[in-house]
Amino acid sequence: MDKGETLSPISGRAYIRVETESAALSAVREGASVSLCGGLIPGWRREPRALLSFILRVLDGNHRQMVRQHLEYFLRFDFSCSTPQVGQFQRRLHEDPALMGYAAGSMIAAMREMADMWIDSGKSGTDRDVDTPADRNVEDDLHGRGYSLFQRIDRSLLRSYPRYTEMRRDGSLQIKDAYPKFDVDRLDGFWGLDEVMKAHGAKWAAFYFSRLLNSPDSRSISRCDYCKAYFAYQRARLRTVTHGVFCPACNGKASVKRTVISRAKRLDTAARAWIEWESKRQGTVQPEWVAEQVNKAHGTAFGRRWVSQNATEVQKRVEALRNAKG
Image: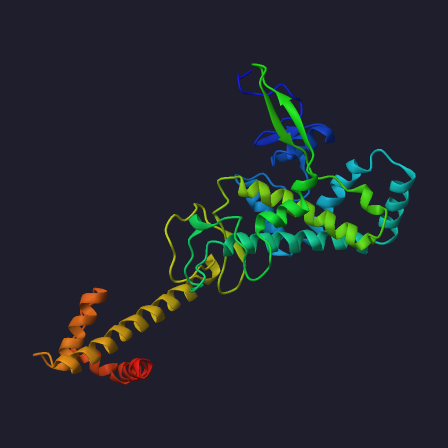
């Protein structure tokens, strides 16, 4: 046994085949991909980035039945020690399938909200095409929500998060997290059952998304600016993207957009050069001088013909610049 390995039987591993449901519960606390007697816990697959892939399936919204089965799977353990109150609640769940639907829908909605807040924290506040994943953080308030991603996760999960202590071979201790449990206390008081189930689904979303934030894949997850689908890069992007983020299916549109943006920038440069030539009356012919300035700024090799072909667009920008100054 390694010096740093814990002696606790409830430690998780990256991928574990287990024979009992209790061992599966222990492993999933660590966000592990777990096999239970040859089958997987609902929603999990045998793949390299199991947690990220699971979250992407939740975000997709087309796997509501998977999400429902996942929540039902763990409720069985939460209700293993039945009380009259729990028994009554279980009967209500059986009689009204919509209640589990509320939990599944809430888990999907909460996961999307947290993913959007995380992704948007890396985008420029003035130009939404500019995206820097390295700048993402959980502290910023975004889009007038009035709360940060940290506050969202704290409210749903961290304030009532169960933890336990493990001991290593050398006697040192470490604090570990347990999986979210159903809040039976909310069955009393003014909470309606639909709200109780929605809160439970949101708690599971916070549980998994907080683990993604604590993983190397936290900056791999992205959202397409065109179709709004969530996807993941194989490797997290280190550089700033200035022309928008597009999923593999929309890459063609990304190329078109980059072409349009590049052309617009060249025309803007040409308009500024046009005005500068008129103010200074440079020695060369105006179209030639304008083309030279565009080539210097953008690394192109245009001649006076390019300026003539785009004269109408350049003149529109010239007028816009003059009106802005005047």
